[in-house]
Amino acid sequence: MKKAIAILLILISILTIFTSCDEETSSDLYYPVTEDFGTIDPQVASVSSSKMIAYNCFEGLVRLNENKEIVAAGADSWSVSNDSLVYTFNLRKDAKWYLTNTSKEELSDEDKDESLLPENFDNRVTAYDYAFGLKRALDPATGSAEGKYLSSIKNGSGVQSGALTTDALGIEVLDDYTLKITLDYPDPNFLYYLTRLAAMPCNETFFNACRGRYGLAMEYMLCNGEYMVYRWTQGAVIRLEKNPLYTGSEPAKNDRVWVYYVEDGATVPEKIEKGTYDAGYVSADSLSLFNDDFTVSALSDVIWGYWFNCAADTFTTTALRKAFAASADLSLLTAPDYIEGTTNRLLTNTLSPYYDFTPELISYNENTALAHYKTAMNENENISASMSVTVLTTEDFADCVKKQIQIWQRVFGIDVKINIQSRDEALKLFNSGNYQIAFLPVTVTASNTAEFLGTFKSGSSYNITGYANEFYDNLIDSLTNTMTDEQKNDIFKKCEQTVISDAVIIPVYTEASYFILGKNVSGIYSFSESEIYFRNGNILS
Image (tube, rainbow, N blue to C red; front, side, top):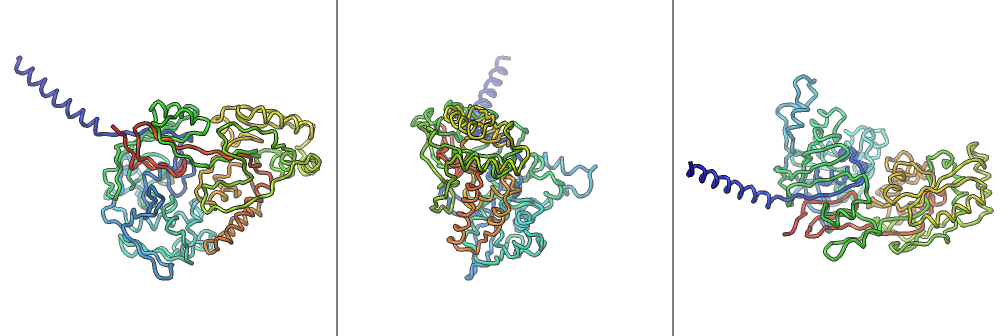
């Protein structure tokens, strides 16, 4: 009996040793997001949390490395014709889609119709997948916000306008692993646009099997990137697992990433400092929590200003917004220490291409303001002396905004109230459209000037202000990749001036957001809150 017990204890000890080794060699990263997950369909993902997941779970023909250089990804080589119109991509032949057992069970049910996933599903990533993804992005029925950046593809504009079908596109599958793309005109940014989510591959068989649910849950996900979605609890967490089928040049160093939806974003900085999360974005007012043990990267991408909700009742009337803007005394504002400086720009210098411009702000003049107000009353019967307006802001600017409110009450003779919230809660209200006027910081998450200005276009899913102006829409639609940089900049300037002249925003201050790597964490890098890459993430011993 004693001998048997001794043998059992030895076996338990050996098992413990191996279990411990597995635990020590495994690595989990923990990351918070303050936007609940939407669809992770790369062609239509719209919120930053979903985009971030998609960038880690899908791989395009090419990608950006840590230094923002374009490098090989799904394609291991490519060539460009002498006239810069024909791109030929040679794909890796070992790339596979990871099909989870959950997807197999959900989409291969014999009781469902024949359009679902076939038993002999081919999980190779082929040129057909990249072609289908590009066609989806350009098809107006998809509603891809980034699809317009691929319009240089032959007949791209005609397809986006609805005049042509996607079969007319200059996208040709030469064989399973060779894709040819022909452009209407040379586009120096074309390879860059192929790194974006709109250009990610999409398996047509799997997409059709999802029957409109592609990207909406774990069972409707098919991943070819460094990670795959292993668990998805709506409104709580997405667990990413290292993709065992990934064969690219940079497989994930860590085993899994837990991405948590944090409803109260104000708790994020402290939890990064305590090590609950391994990285995350924080605002400047939280920076004092982090000592030299943390890696801090600054991104000057925040604009403070008065924002007007152009979709809210009376503020749909441009004259009313101009009235409030013309009686906004910016000298009343006193900035806290974390503010970087003043600005009269709608844009930040993080956008590319960046251009110098001095837009004309609406001047402070109470007589002009009153004239605009009278015009607004004539245009909108809901605007009167009995109306009530509420201004949303944070604690830091509450006293300044109260002084401004007194001016608006005196000039217009109306009731103006203040709604003071924490920064996180105020931004939630703002992003949900639950405000009339707000003095708040808004983070520019786009990396491209045209992409950011496009968010003010009516009908855009990113249009947080509800702004609608046909002239502005036409300016955005007039942008083409055949234009010179000077021509594009002229349109950009007109767009920026139009938004400011129509009193959509009164820009006042700039602020940086900060990407924090926790103690003993390295390798996670970010270009914006939508683009955080975990593949090189490492927990140091």
